[in-house]
Length: 160
View: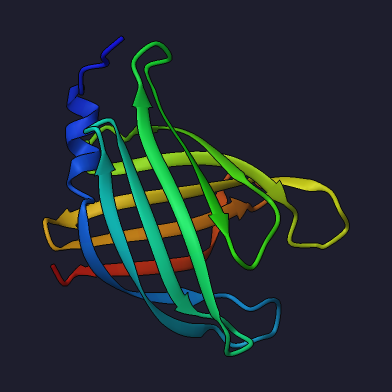
């Protein structure tokens, strides 16, 4: 069986390359936001998947490592993927679609609630391609009023 890349896979191919990142993160109520720097190397797997391997500063001064996989499942008509990191045991599973502009990939997931009470919460990551050399990733949680509250914004600049 040989799967053929679809137009959605072409969108993912725009992520392939070397990137410098700067992440602006909320550290909790009444705490100042913090900025962390890192890098990401994104490669293609058979033109059907992208694998983004990240490395960056953590609040405790250590270096965190991450792996994001993204693909498109024609049978579902949806983008699918996962995210794991050296700082967590939860595997985030993504389900998403491009927005109406075709420049932003909206990825929904579920993970441990920020309250730390052991419950799960919805999360939304939005990856926006600003230009061939610039993209933005925002991470948000439900605000309780039908909207979303952003808690992390990462800006990626292509370095190679």
